[in-house]
Length: 468
Image 1 (cartoon, rainbow, N blue to C red):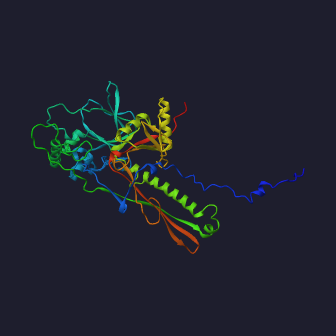
Image 2: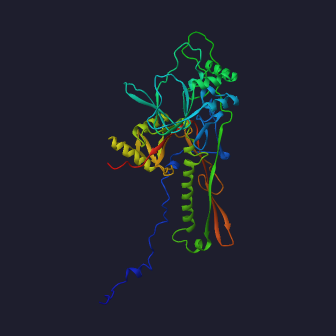
């Protein structure tokens, strides 16, 4: 059968004369970048931002550090200064002797390390794993009072118990059980007393600690401000001043850069209906902004995951993120929490836990977007929060803004050849290969003004449960 003779122009031929409607170049790597949108951005003139805080009495990071040789673990002697009774003590010989008294032990999940109501007879350092502090609840049933993990310790009151005390010995106020496989270092009270008998400087230090254990601190560890209240008559009022940290931290602006190259022939001949240079620049800037958000989350110097105070980190109770875990996270940033930040898979895992309990969280309106929320605090997705090979992730909660002493973003505006706030596009000329070159630079950082502005729920299990 021969093809029927056409009576009109075919569509294939007609397209040769028509202007095709086309999209701008698309890029799958573009995400919502909620963190960049939600952080208040503060001008960092001079390329740095100094965070001045009240003086805080701290020895280090609050957790004990160890050295390992194969499967053997030993505490670094100076790290024993993290235990409150030993803060400020610097006799290396005595600290070496104490470190040598610690013995390594391994525990399996469910094993009891110390029993509530029994005498406190050892100092325990947590090398690896997670432990649960179990005690009596309000209505008689056992309740988990908290968790202990890598670098934590308990039983430090063993160091200040007097041999000649006439009263009853101190008792454990809670039971400690291993929640996972744990490696611990323990020093018995008798071993400690043997070392104490050989060090006059250690005895003097502990005696001073017994007499003045608080060191004029408020509950947050800051140097106390003396204030009198509720007095009558004309008593002498306390004098005071607000002390500051002597060496405050400075955050320097970081940079993400690339050189965009476009051939002059492309820019000259193929510039309609879309500006080729403009589209190349648009996609390059999108990639830089993605890298910027990734750095704000993961950078080891200023990233939020690495700058969350160790006292502001908690673990899930059972693996997946439950409503109870999110409530506990809110207790750490209870002053004006702004938003949660989580990997989309962690948000999905939290949704499954809510559905399993018959809890249906509300959504809140954020700039016309309906966002999943918990207790009225929105939960925003961020695919820059890593997911480990064991399918665990983290959830962040933060307060934002300078006025609220929260988390802020740092940038500098008014840059030479500024294209967007904090981002410049500088023309570099044409080389011998007729390539146009543009230097694209984004400057940024982030700062946590006070530790309780940021908290993290760690080891959040996001894998689906087994088949029913």
